[in-house]
Length: 383
Image (cartoon, rainbow, N blue to C red; front, side):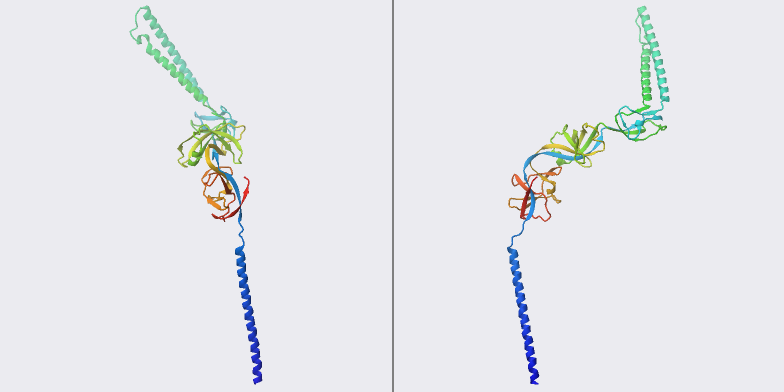
């Protein structure tokens, strides 16, 4: 029995030795891993950080002539509903009265039946002839009475003796009859409806054979030669203009950015629009060749303003959505600034120059990851 116990003790000793060896190996691996991690941390800490590359534009502070930009609609100077001046049945509609037609001033549009007005003219002519006859008779009586008193070497006692009152009444009757004749002729002439100015017929409101009343609209006519615009400016933009602005010439640019004409300021300021609380500027569009400017166009209006000192023109990409601009100082550190925007022109924004010298470096493509005071690697680009 003692012989069986001895082998078991040897097996237990071997097993214990293997366990001790495994524990020692495990401790060695853990120690090596710990030492490796410390070395990696120390190595990473010692490495120099990579600076973020930033594209900057080197700009100089300068004086600039302000340019105020706004939008306005081109409107015809004259726009009217052509109405019937007399009542009657329409017996003729000319081609010029159809919608879309371009008509010159004085072009005939409609003809209203004129029989009753011809009759009125004839009656007025008769009344005038009778009044003229009565005037001749009154003049003859006055002349005879005056000659009779002269033959008798007597003096007429009063105007009645010379038939002077009858003569004055006859003269007024002639004047009244003549005025009635002119009124009747005017009404007869008004049976022919003509265009008071050149333009386009935008809408026809009556038809052939229709009976119209005096004052009833017939067509809508808009001017095709003279145009005007009404622009609105904020208080800031108004302050940038060179006053007085009356007579100044503004540039007109279409939606594609092509200059298409000019307009002269007729009047501006004096009152604010009741709805927008902005200044209103009234312009007259100058004549252009061809049909480059049409009624209804929505154009950009560029007004030349006064000279503004100490400004900087930056690209519009440099302005962030939050309204900030990032500059890079002499130590290559980022600075954030909320600029005082003076005006915009095309793809440029003119701002009041920040303090810090006559030249500034502005980041043209700011990123959301920018932080104030962050060191960067600026890369200059050409304007």
